Image (cartoon, rainbow over all chains, first blue to last red; front, side):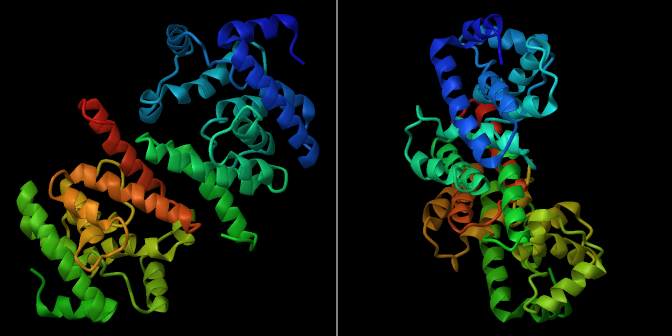
Length: 194
Length: 194
C-alpha cells in the first residue's frame, strides 16, 4: 500500500481528479484480480501508480523526460499522451522505489499494450479502459467482456481504439498492433475463434 | 518488357484472370508513373510481376516457400494472403532474373506496405488497390486521391484496410502500421495536415 507521502506526491503530480480516476482503476483491477486470481497487492500498487507521470504541467513532464534521458521514438514524439506510461515506469522505479518488473511493465504499457502482456499488465490495461468514469461509445461491451474473458475484452478494446485513432487522424502505436496480433494468434493456436 | 516465355510462366503460376489483373495494375501504375515522374520501365516490370507468386495451387505455393527457405513470421503464418509478396520477390529475383532492388521491394511489400516506401513501391501498392477491377466500398475516394496526392491516397487505403481487417476479425501486419505512421509523421513534420 502507498503511504501518505507517496499519495500526496502522486496527487501533486497529476491532480485530484486524475487521482480519483486511479482509485477507480484500482477498484476495478482488484475485482478482476479476484476473478483471474492475480496478486492483489501488486495490482493495487500498479493501478494507483499507473498515471503517476501524467503531469498536469506539460513543462514538468518534459523536464522529467529529459531528467530520465528518455529518447522518444517517432510515434511517441508526436503523441504526448503516450509518454506518460514510459515515464511513469521510471518515476515508479526511481521516485517510488518500486522494483517489481511486472508492476513497472504494467505502468509502462498501460496505454499501448504490448506483445505478450502478463496477466497484471492486462488487468491494468483493461481496468483503465473500463473504470466507471469512462462513458465513451463502445465501452459497455468491453466492460461486460472483461469479467468473462480478459483476452477477448482486450482485443475488443484495441479494435475500438484503433478505429478511434483512424477516425481522429492519429498515429497508431506498433505495440498496440503487436498486443492484438499476439492475443489473436494465441486464440487461433488454441483452436478458438480467430 | 517481359518476353513471351516469362509471360507464359507467370500465367501458368497465377492463371489468366490474375494475369489480367496484373495488366490493369500495370496500366494504372504507368498513368501514375507519368504523373509522379517515375521510371516507367521499372513500373511495368514490377506491376506485371507483383502477383507472380500468387499461385492458384496452394501446394505449389507452399513448395516454393520451402524451396526458398522462407521462414514465415507469426502474422504471415496465419494469413496465406501475405506470403505471395515475399515469395514473389524471390521468384522475380531467381526465376525471372530481376536484380533491381527497388522492383523486388515493390513486389515484396505491395500488400502490406512498409516504413519509408520508395515512390515505385507506393505506385505499385496503390495501383493494386485501385485498378479498375476493384469495386469494394471506399475504393472510389482512394482512386481519385491517387492522382492528386500519392501519400494521402496510401494513408486512406491503409485506413480502410485496417478497418476491414478489424471488422473481419483478421490480423494486422505491423508493416502496414509502420507505412501509415511514417507517411503521417512526414506530413506532420512538413507542416501539413496530421
